[in-house]
Image 1 (cartoon, rainbow, N blue to C red):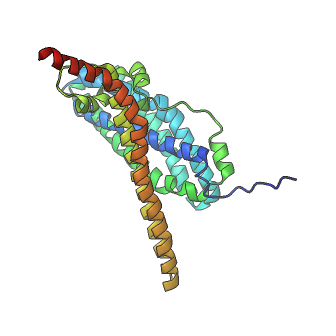
Image 2 (image 1 turned 135 degrees about the vertical axis):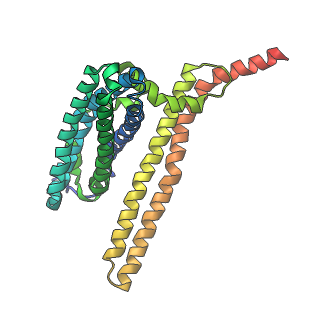
Image 3 (image 1 turned 90 degrees about the vertical axis):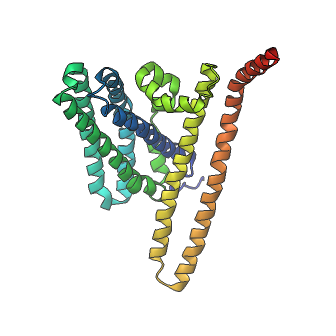
Length: 308
């Protein structure tokens, strides 16, 4: 007979759990970037409604069509799984789920208001009121994300079992358009343009060469690098909380020594990840950047020879 497998807590190391949490955190990274665009455009809504409003309309559509439809239900399922193992979290689970629903209703209202408004009305009181509502939405969404990550994302590894992760990863979910520049540009072209602006500036060498392939590869590489360091930041927050908890629970000198050993090992693993993740990014990104840059380098080399 084959022995029964025992579902053990703390099995986020299994591939499904790692990927599930990575995608949730990547979704938050994409959401943070879009919220930054919304915040910038709402400040221009009264002065330049003709350029700000189309970007805001697409940003709200992105939130409604991906974050509220796909990301939040996955979070709700994660929170419910954690609540089953930690009933004391039931009240904050209900609160966050209510905020998901109220956030969706507010996003729908803001989207409708932006669609119905005219440039003339946006330059008046209506534009000022809508800008305040957009600022409030951004502020609330950021606070909501911080609470989710502090309370639930950090506890998932410790509380969930292998069976929980299997249930959470059973359904196929589309990827975040914000992480796929071409897909984002097709669905939300003006939002994609704003998200790409700062990265295009980094990639602009001022040599007058307009190479879309190189710019796309550079944009993707920078986005992946930001995601890499965002993941390390989340891990650092988890590490700090775990270390503080270990020290608080140590009530005797011997327990303090044991806790110090545990903390040392956690810190060592985190340091290893700090070295591994950027190296992995370089291995995965450098070939694409080099392949995209080679035609550019060849043109510049050829131009230099011809000028001699």
